[in-house]
Image (tube, rainbow, N blue to C red):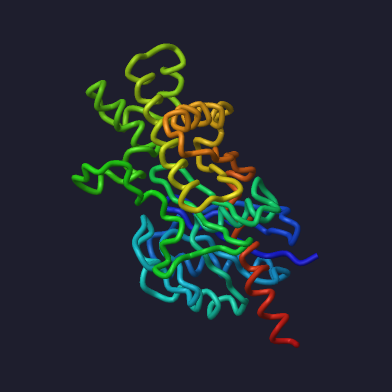
Length: 302
């Protein structure tokens, strides 16, 4: 069975793994994200040389990834923006390469063999320091005319817009939760974590209880908006927050309150947590390779 070498480029680590055509991970590891593009290309090439059996290379990367291989926008890995990364990797490794945005890769993983498997119309949300995601229509990824499809975090939930701090990513992400509690307690955000805030809320800390309650409410408001904008069969939630066993229950409680208040709304969003977490980007990048590069190679042979 074919195997593919997959890379997930992050701000701290570059993860890699050998992934099979049925979503199996046979081997994985990680290295510290290098400080230059040449070093990154060297790492990819060295790992590729150690796996000559790989049928191709799949890459998950931050930023607005074009089909041509140029990554627009910005991220913590600044040097990947501007050059044609796809071409550089192909030239260095002599292997076919597929590259896609990391949130889109997470979505691909869920459509391939995760919570959204078999769904035609689905949204995948990734909640972390911000909120991003992926849109699937008739099973196909929708990237948008400006590569901004799935940038849910830019959504506004208020008409009183003052700055970029008013977008959904800045008010309803886990980073926003930490900032809100830090402000209430007059401490540095670096002294807190999301996990600690949830733990303190469960023990009755009033600042944390209020912040967590607002966090779930704002998530529910955004999810409600997404449901009525796109009307998907399913909205899948990923990111570190998806590890919380009560996540779906808490958001559903808030959705019920919203729907009780709006008698026009008859459809309640169906939500679920992602099946794949730390390996979602590796798997999804390979699914993108199979769907696009493998298909192209078959067509060219015919």
